[in-house]
Amino acid sequence: MKITRLDVAFDDHTGLLNIRQIVNDTQCGMYISKSDYWETVLSSKGSTVQIGSPQSKVLIRIYDKAAERGYSSDVHWVRVEIQLRDDRAVQFTKIPLPIGQAFAGVLLNYLRYIEPAEDANKWRWPMTNYWAALVGAAERISVYQAPGMEYNEERCKRYVVNQAGNAIDACIKMYGIEEFESMIEKRETMKNPKYDLVIQRHKFDALANRVDFYFNGKSNAQQEDEVFYFIPPAIS
Image (cartoon, rainbow, N blue to C red):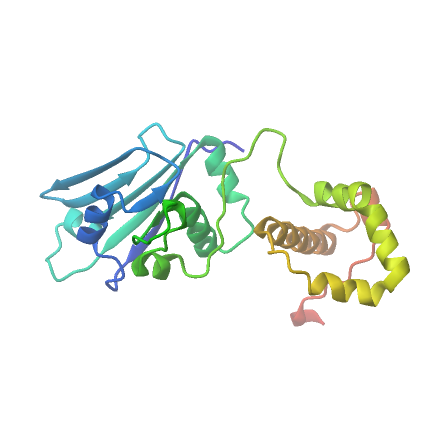
């Protein structure tokens, strides 16, 4: 699949975002971004903020859509748009999440507006209330993938079996499978979103296999070894 450009947008009609405040915060450098290019445009067609150069594979644009359309001043319509090109666009389509969650995760990874704090590291400053309300509880999602480095189910399995397999085997023999499962559930390490994506992709593929089996029957050797029962409620 080849995608030269993909635009994914969120439209605010409720007053969540104040375009003037966003313009001011951008000009004052009160944001964190993976791009060092920014620009703001003020015109008769409203205000626009752009993070990322026109040549960037990931560009974020925030603008007054109501003013662009020539609506009256009492109409609130601010659009937040992520423009993705080439491989970044393809990677976005592979995120196994509802489009709203995928949008929020990618947006959070590439841009966040912040409030000043005492911490000397600006990257640790808290998000503004309006940006936190926009992205909600989203986890950061990157659409950059180094060539040949896509993390998938097979790589996860190889790591567990080949690198951690001996330690896992020892723990199971010492504590038993139930206690080992309890230890994993109570682990103190922070969960990594990439594993959630692997799980969701596995579930999606499993469902796709069941649907394919229902409509097409056994079509490959793997399906010969598995039996799936998928009966729609209408004919059950």
